[in-house]
Length: 192
Image (cartoon, rainbow, N blue to C red; front, side, top):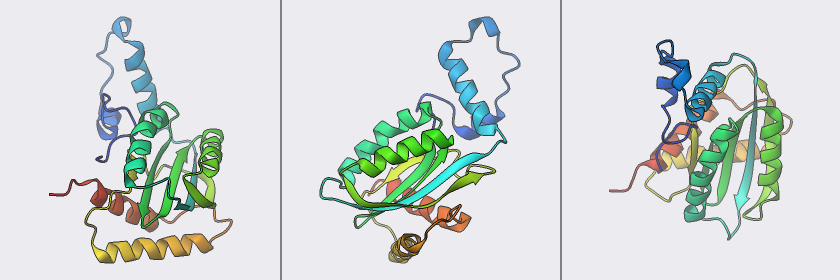
């Protein structure tokens, strides 16, 4: 599964949607789907605050790389409809996820995640309103056991340990988000 826009696979990538010139479009022929895509693109450009939540958990025997891939594929469409962006990385059963969107929607999704029997020890490590999304074009779940440089895996496990000790933080650090992005990208590249 590659890095994809939080929008459905048929829509424009985030970068294109932001730069697209809609002035020439005849408003009489705009479909409901096109209007939805345009509204979603506009919401991504909205400068109002976004709620960002980060959590850590541990996978149970019910959650492996194959199940995580299915979850990622099904949640991509649902999260786009809910205007949720984020990234989830799992390595050796340790999970770190960041969710961004409207507070009520993010919290409802987190409650559902916390009740899911496929993982345990679910703990919110940061949450609060932020000025902008870190993950505006992201909707990626990564858990495939593919080749990731050992140093990157060590950094991930160090981050997991640090986050597991946190309590009451408002936000995750930008460099922590970048580590998760890089890890997810390595995992999304098909093995040769």
